[in-house]
Image 1: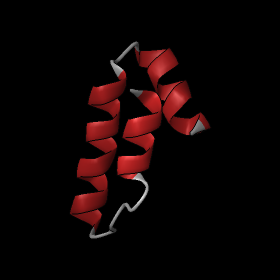
Image 2: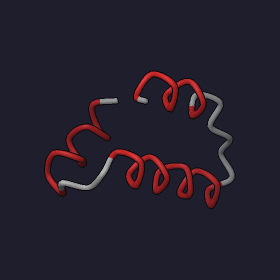
Image 3: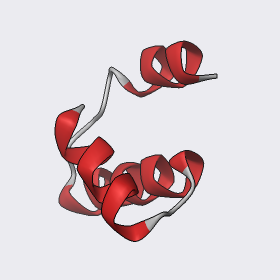
Image 4: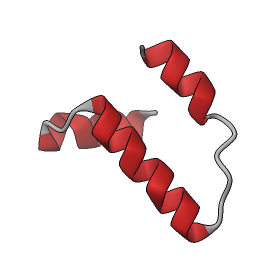
Length: 44
């Protein structure tokens, strides 16, 4: 995800923290993220 990559690059935050933040945002917005497990596997 280019947007996440740019955020990581600009803020120097760890990948896991950024992904968790995005997942939390999606949870708050009520949008299920079916790609999260797949992304975690590919990154780790």
